[in-house]
Amino acid sequence: MTTSPFTDLPDELLICVCEQLADSKAALRQLVVTSRRLQAIAEPVLYRHIFFRKQSELANLLVSVESSPSRTKAFRELDVRCKLDGNGRVRAQPFELVGTLLRQAPGIQDLTMESPYCNESSWPDATVENGWDAVMSHWLSPLLEAGRPDLISAPLQRTVSHPLPALKRLTLHLNGLEREFWTINGDFIHLLMHPTIEELHLSSINIPDDATELICPDVHTPLKRLTLDEANVTIRGLHGLLAIPKALEYLYIGENSYSPRESRYPPGQDYNDLCSKDIDGLVATLHQQRASLQTLVYHRKRDIAHYNQSFPQSYRGPDFSTFTALRTLTITYDFEAMTRGLDRSTTTAPNLESLTVDDFAMTAALERGNDTVCPALFKDLASANPKLRNVDIVCEIFRMADSFYHRPRGRGHGGIKAIGEYLHGKDITFCVLLPPTHPRYVPPFLYAEQVAEHRLWYQNDEAGIRNLESFRGEEDSDDEDEVEIGWLDDVLELEENWEVEEDEDDEDWEAEMHWGRQS
Image (cartoon, rainbow, N blue to C red; front, side, top):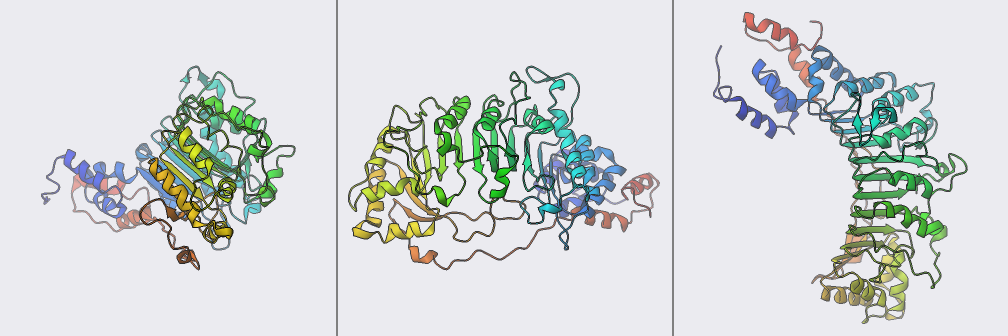
């Protein structure tokens, strides 16, 4: 049998080559079907990241795993993005087997599971009759088992083995049964107690008052990043949630803005509008993570009815002085509540470096200013926060930016410029950003849904105000091309037609490489 200079390379160099080809499934599958030696070297890289949307892709994966169960040990990232077919339907039964895969793959570190009914108008079709409840149960069963309290002894030492022992990052885009949102209660609370997860992203979710009542208060997890995307959340529910991590570093709270009917379920919950209902209670809840929380993003629900809400002048704002780790703060639709207190050295976060707010929080200050004098609010922010280096205003409504540009009584972009020049003198970058006018997608953002970036309208640099007129008439791209990764189909097809030299030593290997298919 002839050899090539490539195959003469030592294993260590071939492994390096495969690592460099990690993003090229086509190249890796060519190596896999070249020789037994290259198969052993390339397969762990080929199977490191598993992605599928269709049941046919899952079926091919199951065939390959059945013929060689050790392949599951190579899994590091599993990306399950179930897709509706052309008729807006999905066969539930094959996707149940994802739960079996999870139990067979102890090396998975990054797991994403997306229901085809999440953020989808056909969510009422997720019913008991079509079997989707069984799919969800099979998906979550390994995760819930890993968080069972009877398997935990402080500090998170396991008495028996558990599924997914290496899992670090978990993203769940799910839906309820005949509901658009799903609810953290009952057995679902064990998701929050997983002993190895460091990053958790939950979307379209209800977090009621009693969400964590059954969790043992002595159990704490290594969770560092928590994202609640399009969530119905109560202060009490959030308080219980934030009591679980040992040292949370990143918190994203995105209140439900696009599915108002879901805010009434389960009944009797006082969801959302946390700032207006109990700002001090909200900050007290966040206070549990004051020593570790570095980034806080709070998007209050979009509600036109509350745009004119204001707090009495006597209200001094919440106290962030004990949030010693807080570096980045982003708050929208809070109007005044959370920004008060940041303009005083005694109540602001002592190490705050970056602040992003929406235009409503700053409109009053701009109205009280003029073209040449920086409003007192910005002066106070700069004075109270000596480490502050970035201040951004996001104009959530396009006409607000327009009014800044054409302000009556002569107060317009001159006022913005005065703020920018003052903050520039304090070595603070000041920007005014515009969101997309007609975004194609809304949270939660799912597979292949591109998030439109904010557009810079003003920065306190030499360019200053950008041309506002250039933003008019822009339309979002209509490109909905979907990238399908069918590399397993190609591998199976190659192997079915693969011919090897008639060598007795290779006969068994050739049979194995058919991955269990009948010739």
